[in-house]
Length: 335
Image 1 (cartoon, rainbow, N blue to C red):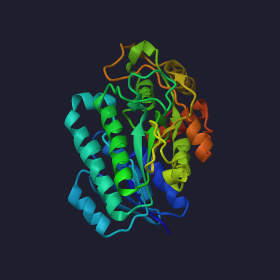
Image 2: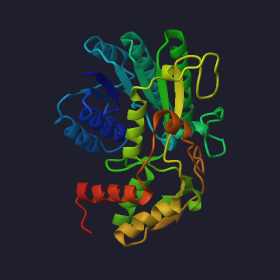
Image 3: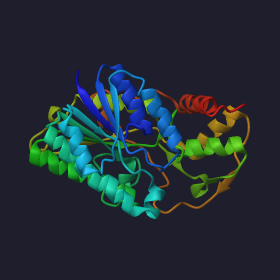
């Protein structure tokens, strides 16, 4: 039985991925620092479910804690590491920049060192659509990503460069996944779907940036998990071409891939789905575009589709309804 380390296991994607990996017969060691960036009770509720599963073990560890992470590696032999631990959030990175260096740079370096020391078969790590910065959508992995507009985005771009260095120096398989606006049950309270739903239920105004003139490549959590699983056993060495250098591939065993639905949706259409579910209108407080934010994202997923068989299947309406069903049940909302 392969043993996989999932960092950020108490987080949104880490929780869903860990469950699916266990269903598929893997042993999962999950770590998380369970910080208070958002509601700790939500993280604890996710962990409560995971800790009931066989072949799942959890340790409260911060990836920036080099010595504790090394101790974990000394007592375990991981075949695959999936790094989903990071300080998330574009706006938060403007207000609290130092924590992003601790987690997303120093912490990621510790993950690279652990992967090297463990001689893992594959390191898969979360990058972000934010790396595209000032680029025009649709975003392709073949585009250069040299103009980030938030520190968060800059740390994710740095992760890709750091991973390439280790791939080259140590012949280490690394794959970075640029996630596009993930949503679904057990999602993050700082994301739009969660914020809009809470505000609508409470009857309070909610800020809608860029006066609602946003589009996002909203991607349902199950499709994201299926994409990660598709990459799991297909390392960059499977596709390695000598003397090939591009923004997404290299002669080193390194690759970065977009992972999204590939169908951008206007933010106001997203809002409409929530309003239809509850049969009431959201009180909208329209605001200008926030610093560090991009107005539109659109994902070119052709590489993930052609090389890994990725095929997202959940429509926006279906996905939003799944989230709202969960929200109503979890928070015991009377409608």
